[in-house]
Picture 1 (cartoon, rainbow, N blue to C red):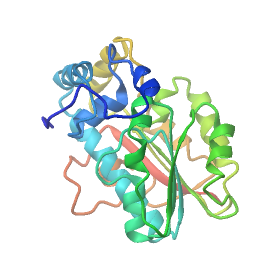
Picture 2: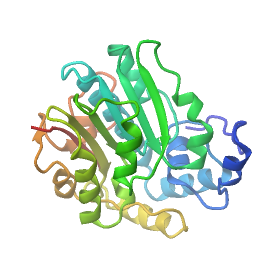
Picture 3: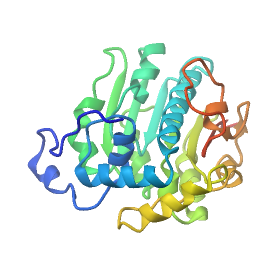
Picture 4: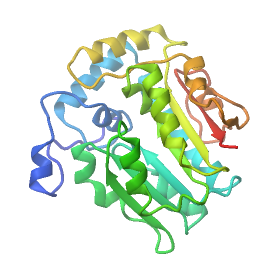
Length: 275
């Protein structure tokens, strides 16, 4: 977790680089830091270290969330036969991105990444490297505008065929729970029967220290993140058929030999199929 980090984004569109605010921490960059990435700034590393001082287990939460993402995509591309993925709020590229996992199993898989963070935009080209057989696209759009997300995604994905919707650690950025559920429903509505939702988010059920650390982080002026209860996370799957074992701590969702975090952890997630 102490790998070299750069305080300067890679070359890209100057106008985009100018939009990157390095005066306040940013959750995607802190997450990148916790996962051992280099796409973060000193303010992000300071905030990440402060969070970790209050709740050291946050690095396990970050790893568990990422490993959950990999296992759910492996399930969707493999057992479920999904060949299209819509990853909303993807964040910065790290190891085992959605397209890499999916296209290892199904080289013809199509993936659309959605984010509206300028630093992610600078690194978009890294996300756009996929297999010759498939397609990988990045769109600059906002979670709060599902219609725009769907319209842009439709240029790459076929909405007559099942799609895997990925919401990994993103709905906590929508403070109001009913608004977050509404946005999820609006993203799911145009997807055909046989589509899936993979969603995980943070809780404070197991370690109350995580709530204290999150409150401190939210007070920094950064975009706040709301920790929710497991029941609230399960509420995002209303109307869907939950895949076994349901909504559980991320390490307990179909674990494999790559799980290297405690089984009980403050990151809950699940996968649901649209009937």
